Length: 294
Image (cartoon, rainbow, N blue to C red):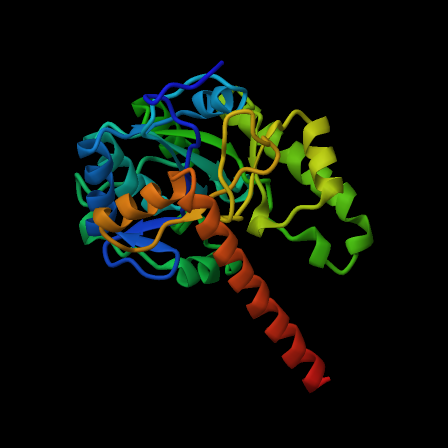
């Protein structure tokens, strides 16, 4: 199918983790997140659903100003703050859950009914609480997941069961067996609690290799999301290497400029090439310093 000027030739995929009152590391403030969603709504952006994005990758038409919003991990603040704001502006997002940390329990307040008075820890505080066995204090509950799903603000997909980097484990020779078990357990949790399993998967900490990709595809995961920002998701593009842009804690105008650049057919690739070369130079310097120190 040939694309008209009113249809997208590429779709930027945005990556969020937290939305909290004050913002911070891997966290967008409530004020800036609302500014970003307001910008998208005001300027006619369509926030795609997973199935629409999948269809686009297969060559189906989507509106010119299309974007895919994604959240990683499944933090409570996604329900408390992001969920009401998405509803307010008619936006929709995908959320990749670490199913090991999602428990049962009643709904908690959102920003509409008291969450603004609750403590909302930042990213590293959340990680600390999780390691202390207190994930239920900072991660979503299944009842909240179902409420967000019913409201159509979020849809839910796998971020594996444990979020472990098995390639870094002591028995990394068994990493392929571990990632397969991890994915199977995640699928079991989705089937048990939500009654369905999707074919979208986000890699933990962005790590994957050819073995991981083959295992994921064999288990039915067809759309594989990375943390690689230096590329464009195009019609008939690779579904097993989906590029995502990490969103900064900045207002809507910044997001608009970043989306314009990400979608530009000429400037977008040039920008990505320049940023990738810069990243590679930093990595070369880091390895050189390590060599000098050893």
